Image (cartoon, rainbow, N blue to C red):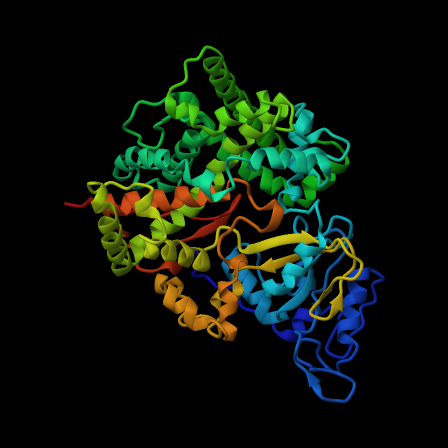
Length: 568
């Protein structure tokens, strides 16, 4: 469980056997450019590179930048061999990242397949805490930035083998970072990412949530599956303008929809594991031999494609026959097809349909984890839940007690938005705020020149667990994010936690998840509807530390049985 803690290795063991072998052996022996940068960073210091002060040449300490520390790593495996690198256990991300910061500081390199650079045999990644420094990396990327999704080589391989046009261009299309990526990305984010576009789907999301909420008590012992079905229902109404009604187990539903949710969960989750696996990288990616794990991913993606593409075709047939209702005509897919036919999409019809399918597929497993964490926090914090209920019931009063778009606005429900922000601080579904590649020869981070092509990740979690920035960081206090609290931090070191990079889990910059605004609206809507309908408790669970969690597609809780008591 998340309450089990891995002891932080001692500083001496952390460097044992690495390229920085001990406190007096500072210069890495590797000729890798990343090691050269680390050597330059530590050459001015005497003693341990973690704790020794840099000097400006006059002997006076220079504390303007944290020191770059190189975590020991090996070709192929990077820093994953813990006996060699001294890193903490990786299976609990909410322990791992703060312990890495405690052990190696605010600026370090580590070898991490999937996160680090594929161009480096050690999979080196620079990890930083300061979002202002990370902004330099984003600005260096220009018109064709990199993104974390590019690491999902297993899923992209399946798509290419299945004949997806969107990933079959010379520059890898949507899987790359060239002109074809930009063209397809522009199509996909239109009618999704802009705040006004995302807001336009909220009424449909509320209707879905009202139906889904009815099924919460019957799903109390299997809430992870329940929220996966909620996520499917909600994004389906965005994509198709239809009410699938899969979330409520007491409602007759199309077995095909239930199967899609099951296969999407397994397919995407296994795809992430494939992309992080050294075994799969060697056998599948290099030698072309399909592993059992890759076959599991492939089989479930095949199911998702068969079902999802069938839904899209049926929608197109209804559109052709003028059989769509007004809700369906307000859907994302309808608008996408209109843009295509008007010659304004910039993509082929096949690409448009492939990307629309990808939106439904990805939405099931990513948004559901965030839904689960938010509802869990409500159950574990009854006073917070009551304050949220009072705010929501007051905001909904003007609409007869039902939610509407205005009731969910930040101006009318500031505590709701603060609640979701606090949930992200304490339990982000993606602890890394963003990961990018350096696209300049002159980029400096914390005073160190970083080689072009290097992977740089911003730890979006650890500062939010540091008492220097957050009082009582393990407690759930949405008040931290209300306007007066944010204003009070301005001009102080603590204002760093208010940086936009720490606001939500969907990356940053031009490769920010195109459905991120819709996903955040889905989370706010389902949380609000459940809190309005029920008093939610967690019998037998008294604290967050008692709830196990796992790194799947995202970090998700293994939700305990919750009690949903209807409000009078």
